[in-house]
Length: 193
Image 1: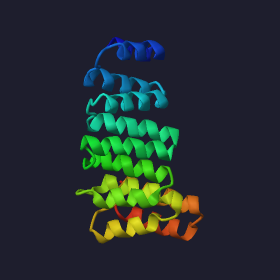
Image 2: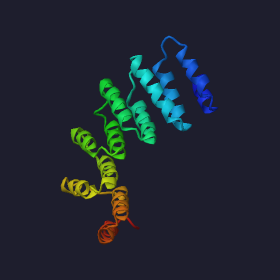
Image 3: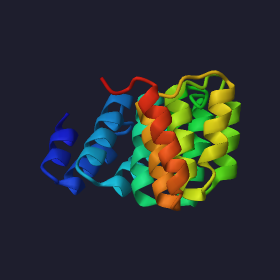
Image 4: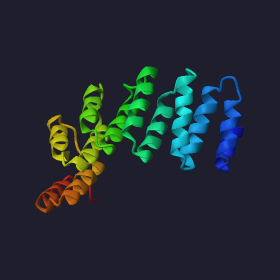
């Protein structure tokens, strides 16, 4: 816990050295440090601790993995994303819906829509939240319509977040007529009370 308080006080070097001088930092200590770094806006340090966990064979759980993927999103480094994915797959938490969602989001933000689609399609459960990530992330590549249509084909009911992603994608792409059509569709879906 001392390491976390050092991170909270932005004493990054003290926090790091506190853990590195131990023979083997515990899962709780590493996860605490990971959370502290991401909360204080130190994504690179967050990722370093995660790799230290992997190197020390301290298995990162789903929560720690999602936190690290969030930090990686801030860095925008595709090769780093792939390395983190490798550690996650080695830990066996890759089929968790939260991890899958974070991976899809991460790869779409890095511009690797093909790998994001592979992760998405490999997931055993694809809920509305997962589809929303795919739709919003695909907007940057102009492919949100395919994801939205596929979601509707699977009889999943779009929610408010789905429509916000679709409307933002239309706005970003200058698709005024489609934007108005989706807005009318959203309005008739009783989201407004």
